[in-house]
Image (cartoon, rainbow, N blue to C red):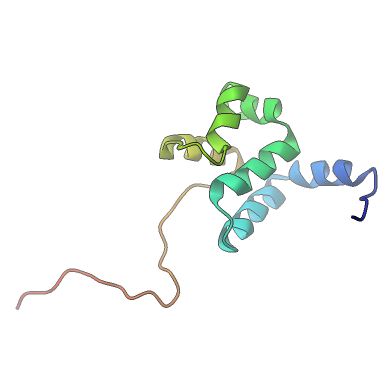
Length: 106
């Protein structure tokens, strides 16, 4: 396995410290099919759990638990974790999906 340069973590931390970069990264990861929790977990681990927990006003253990693959966080918790990134959960049409709507009565 190739070794990354020693300063790779420093560069990544600098990039993750930029809110525009970080929010765009999470958006693109989710759009590519990565679960939201996994994308947010990667950002949290990159920035530091304690630091991120302070940003969202949660205990570090609760942040770790919320993004754990076997957890079942509430929508409110996920929204709270997305808030520092300037993101929120929304609804969008899937490409090519059949749309069903209410029938109109004449």
